[in-house]
Length: 182
Image (cartoon, rainbow, N blue to C red):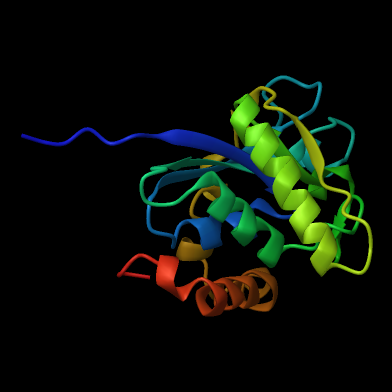
């Protein structure tokens, strides 16, 4: 007899979705991470459309997780560790509204936790937090070649220069929350 597990969904934008996906894939309690687009006004956007900055969408990850193993608050602690929530519409060299920092909540409880974590993060940064908190908009999965991008392309230039350091930082800070295989 299999025991039923709880599942919740989180939707986060924190720059390039490859970075977020690579980190969240390694955490215990995460059952799925899908890169995609949300927050804009164009239905079924393509990567090229989103990169133009004209769709209003952000690059996001939709994370399915077991709250009995990892809490939503833990997910947000990771989020505020692996990206800069003080830069408006930018993460490093990635510039544009598609790279904004946003927490799209799925419930009033997630909204309350997000607001609490922003307050906590605000004490750790010397500039104001610009992370948007909004109800989850329609999610559009990114093209197949974006899924598991870092796992499939670890030696690609961007992955080596940008994604790998974020993964390494998360491994160092959150080593007790990592899957055994990570």
